[in-house]
Amino acid sequence: MGLEPSGLPKLDIVSSTSPAVEVTGLTIRYGNLTAVDNLDFRAFPGRVTAVLGPNGAGKTSTIECCEGLRNPASGSVRVLGLDPQKDQRLLVGRMGVMLQEGGVYPSARVRESIELYTSLYGNVADPDQLMHICGLSERSKSTWRQLSGGERQRLSLALALTARPEVAFLDEPTSGVDITGRGLIRETLRTMAEQGCAVVVATHELDEAERIADDVVVINRGRTVLMGTLNEIRNGRPAIRFSSDNTIDLTALSSALGTPVERHSAGEFRIDADGNAELIGKLGSWLAANGHPLRDVNTSGESLAEIFTRVVGDDNQ
Amino acid sequence: MNIFLAQLKSEIRLVLRNGEQLLLTLGIPVMLLVFFSLVDVLPTGESDPINFLAPGVLSLAVMSTAMVSLGISTGFERSYHVFKRLGLTPLGTPRLVASKICTVLVVEIVQFVVLIPVAFLLGWEADAKRWGIAILGILLGTAAMGGIGLAIAGRLRAEINLAAQNGLYLLLMLMSGMVFPLTELPLVMRGISRALPSTALADLVREGLSNAGTRPGFSLIVLAAWAVVAPVVAAISFRWD
Image (cartoon, rainbow over all chains, first blue to last red; front, top):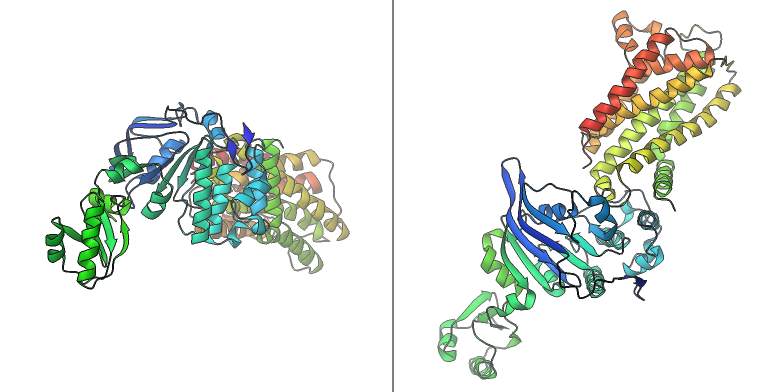
């Protein structure tokens, strides 16, 4: 393993086709409550896998099972070919973890926390580089208590990187993070994946997932309801999406185009059709003729939010 | 750096940085020692109250570090998911527990380094021919008090734990013959007090450093029992997160 200019690990597992994480028939129960019910998913080295779901869907329970923190009631979990419970001592040195919240001594300074964790992992990463990567160099003397929510998330991410992990489990990494911080976290996760790490991100933030994920697993009520690459999922149902003012006569427009037009939200519309130039031309002409603007035409298929709404339902968002 | 040493360094640094814990482990014992030795209001029965106070305050220092300081910090670390995260590193539970024990012992040594010279300056006439008994009492007392502190911290929410540890500290300080003589307690309370680990600790330290223990043999049995039972209860009942 060598250190890349970015400071992130260069791993020897790039392009591996065997899954780094393989969850089969996972069931997790808390007393009478079944939090995760016969769940399947896989995550591969060199890719970012987003585990999506509404609050209470079972994302954190699943992630914690993969980390070895929870016992499954049934099913199988393999991480880097190991059992996270039985082989936890072998696995911890190869795994990066970002908890949903906390995990840091509240009165420890940023540098001290990172130095402690790098020591625990045998000093394979440089604390100064990690602080630089995570945008914390100027906050190195601040304690965890003094950090903003976004800075705390970035510190947790830095700690996850101290292992130079082959697999990383990140639970809601962008929760409470501002726009700049989100960009930094996205960039870091992409770099990790490019260098061979299997990055598993549990989140309910669909926009973020759409920006960073290669693969998507959607969980609802503890079950896998959708799984595939982001492109496969989005291209499964081609659509043209566009923005205009909210006064469009949808019946008239649908009739003019010869295909139904739906209002997705205020000023946002979708047409279930391939994004061909002829149809887009007809759309533009009709809107212009009827005094409506045409903004943000997008032919990349359904957005993740639309897909999520379709498979999970509005009531769960 | 060795994993254990890295963790130990971190633990010690955090304890020494925490002003509230320093007040508890050093400030209060020093204040009690100085105040009650200069202001002779305690019915100690001694010609010089420092001879009663010095071993009692040293015992109080052990209790404040091993039970209250350890218990409060552990409670907050639980609530901040520190143990959960550390559990996913190569540190491992044995090294984490060992670093906590060593931190307590290091802080106790610092306490003794400060308190013993202060006691001598205040005129303490130690009679430490049986110092081994005091050392044994301090080690058993550390185990017993640490077990109690962790048993409480391992189950309660951080804020409730904080109140419980401080309340228990006050109660044991008053009831254990550390600062106030046991002979001043009502008979029933005196009987209960004899079964407390803090009373046994104070008695053994007083026997070892001032040759003035009242029932050292009985105190040794009581403290040894607490030193076994309390850590076992803590180990069984403790929730890491």
